[in-house]
Amino acid sequence: DSGVTQTPKHLITATGQRVTLRCSPRSGDLSVYWYQQSLDQGLQFLIQYYNGEERAKGNILERFSAQQFPDLHSELNLSSLELGDSALYFCASSLHRDRGNTEAFFGQGTRLTVV
Amino acid sequence: GQQLNQSPQSMFIQEGEDVSMNCTSSSIFNTWLWYKQDPGEGPVLLIALYKAGELTSNGRLTAQFGITRKDSFLNISASIPSDVGIYFCAGRDNTDKLIFGTGTRLQVFP
Image (cartoon, rainbow over all chains, first blue to last red; front, side, top):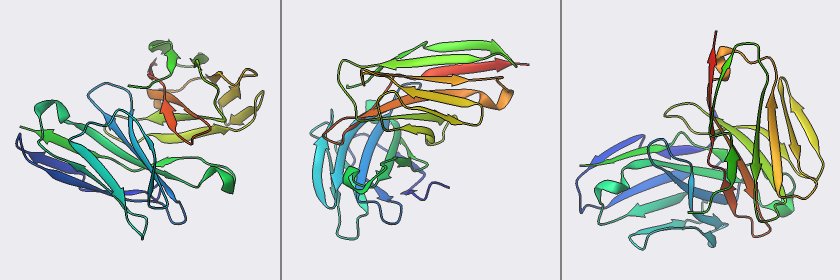
């Protein structure tokens, strides 16, 4: 168990809908990363938050947004869903680099299926 | 999307053989991480590297942080069936962004 919790584990929704994925980082971790993994593909970096603020952005679509709350949990919002958005969405957390070793630990992912 | 170049893309080996895979980047990284992912699961951290030239072992796994800070390799010795999975490298740059490699799919035959 990595200590990173993602909910829900599975989500099936229709095209055009909006969903929210949730991530609780490991205790003490300030950084949260979101990744998208399509079938048999690598991990595509979406966005990173550090202590509530956006820190880095990858190739995240405008239909997607995220935030990190004061209790450090994070949510990834996906709207106007398309069939191609079906994928595994992973959250990872780590300490900030200035606090020493910065291994990133992953949750079990949310499998999103858009029908 | 942003990804590191990882090779080989896939490997089919016999149990007991050694395995080597590597990752290269056009950018400098401050940290290299190696992960293993089983189907439908989240990546699990295997080894973390923090200094150029660093060589670190974790059981049968050995990884090195390249001197140029633009590459890293992972070796697995005496492979066993449970080594099957997808191995990813990841590099962290000075903006704290964590970028992943394209993955190496390992298949081990008894």
